[in-house]
Length: 486
Image 1 (cartoon, one colour):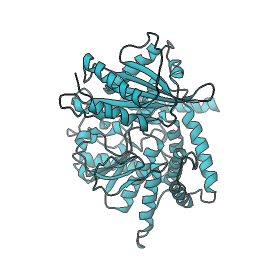
Image 2 (cartoon, one colour; image 1 turned 90 degrees about the vertical axis):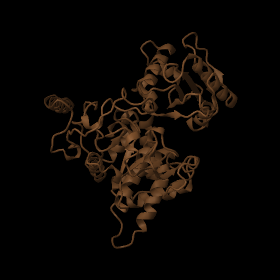
Image 3 (cartoon, helix red, strand yellow; image 1 turned 180 degrees about the vertical axis):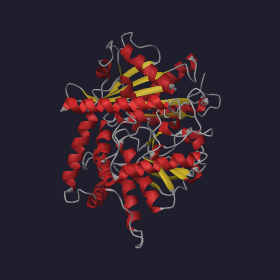
Image 4 (cartoon, one colour; image 1 turned 45 degrees about the horizontal axis):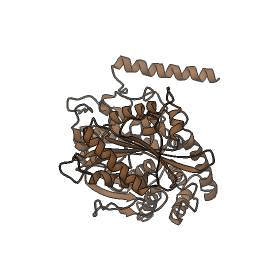
């Protein structure tokens, strides 16, 4: 039976690839209305090679979405989503792309999570876009600021989306590399953006009007007139989005009455809250998380089960999936949870710096073991290729793991390049500035690189359990902003 199913899948994939060859590109048939965006002289394409230097933080495919190229091999042959949420998301994606090419981009609001693309960001964006689409006259679409081929690098996302009956090929989701134009250009055409799970827009969205912010991080003072503008320290940003959605939904007068919220979306919301709160663990969650989760549960298909039972099960299943990273390469580990942007320096004579942070739950030694040579030198070689690909000047890989004694350990791997915005002298100076800032803040222990690392590469360990990216990033950003080029 397994062999038979495997043969069927291979045959289906072969047919899909044959169709690509026959048509000369990976565009769908006309009957697939969701992707029936036809070729026209006015359709825009862009490439990294022709993008201006200021846009280097934008890691797009080499061609725009409408070309149909640079898609994963199973994109057109993967199973379609069958739930109401998938159908709505797919139709919205089609309408957005069609409206853009018809000159109606100004009618759209883009709801976006952070570029790390975790389940919280994904769900918060989908939830608020769905709410805006059904409760207002606005056209709204959720954007995942993650490349299409990186979505499944988070196994917990794949599990949650599968459970929500979304497409296995993610054709019902809009990713950053499927936009019909560069974000910097698109920002000037759309109605505006709503930020969820991050407090300020990335530089690629410069020029876009920030219509709303819903976040559980610190307020950075952006868009003081945005509405909604919610900052609250809860376990999950999805908690805040769902609370606002339910409050406004229940306030709709009858008639017309409440709009329909698909159970797949409600269950996705519960999944996001569960994984970010460790199943509503009191040490990691708040009463707000629990109250909102109960309200969502009461509307879901799981309403006959207890909140504790549901959240424990979701946390267990999603947590197991999240920890299953043994199949990921070094490059995939780095980009699985990467957050970065161009940091503007305060000194006008000092170049701006593209700074990025990878966060992994895998020790550097375990990562080194995944390289063919099993050396730190080989690890840095992979890191160099990745940062060259995205034009990053400074990268930090932040690893969190337990040692053989069960103690929690954190590692910081710092690399500064000299071939993008800075020369060798500037890179040396910047490396010293960032190193000094980190060493002044944390009790760092240097790793002996044994001649395996080159200049401007350093590995530290420390035992400050709470010092993840949320703590390290502001320290490094401050050092970069205040750095003065020699």
